[in-house]
Length: 527
Image (cartoon, rainbow, N blue to C red):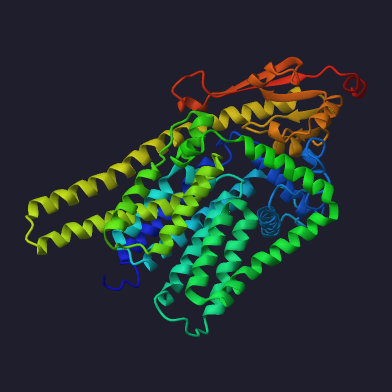
């Protein structure tokens, strides 16, 4: 294959237009888009407390999860610290005084959007480095930018998109170093620095989210194979420093650390259907399972099977080390069994899809030199172009349905939060359930008289602490279906239905939220 050192002018312009359009679309989504869990508020509170010098803790769940109001251990530290730094810098840049660490959802989501755009840029450079032709590079970028799960991750305050960005940067550095793969282990003045950077990026990815740990192991194995065990130690140094620092932090309050880790493992251990089904890719439809809204997720297992079929039969365009990296990431994402993990794989999956398309295109061209009829060659190319463009058209149709729904969802969310602020009496003590739209950040901003608590996933709750907390509550804001449980009992004084503006097939689908007034002795005394 001839050397390709860059993209043509049209490919550069198309790539730039894709990234700009991606940012504009996410900005249009804004704060209106829905997530089914508590994650944004929990992580935002960590970032806010860090920015205000109150430590790595979450007081919104302090009376529900063991020691969370004092120290947090079940969340990895890099993302909250990066988010807190971003928000402080943003306030300084906007001239709003002293950078007090006050957090707004729009600021956190803006950070995710920029990280998502950076991930697309890294994917572009990686595809060029792997010597894919301009059409394949542009297609990989276009498909990734139009994938709804990738868009969701790039517009939520969650660590997944930063993990994806760091892993993409890791793959890029490994691709730059691949020239030494078939050489003897000769001294290279750039190797120690490059190896350290690979180790630093993958270590940061792990301390953003532990799901990156298998990719750290794979990256370390690649470094050792290329450069020997000494380079492996250089690679491992940032991770070992991070582990020592984290254990040192854990030693400050070992009981809280053990209690939170047990609760987190109990939650993760029970989130399991059938591991075989997970490996088949059911995780990639997790958002559809929770929200019942249309997605445009690719059946990635089929793509992997095609890639392996090609790889075993003949040499093709992607190196073996990258295939191992991609397969391990796929297994991590699927077995992780959470709806928000698939975006980590999406850029790599579409890179793999573009490489498969380019390989088939090359095979069709080579048949000409072997005397194959041109009609069959052209038919293969037409089918390939039809599949590539057809998939993007399908992606665009699904995205357009979501974009059309955004204004109505925004109106519904605004009306819900406004009515809730008016309904809650002064000095209320409110427990907010794990759902979206979550009004917690708006209530913290507009109703400072309220005392708020955030409901954790039920499998992480300290049940005894939750019962004690209920004695202090005056109100609970939960999903309607949760009121069937004995814990969530009270007089209904407010009800709202968010119907996703027609995204779901049934008009009854959506989120129904109820505000309950709790009758407890202590709550009555408080009022």
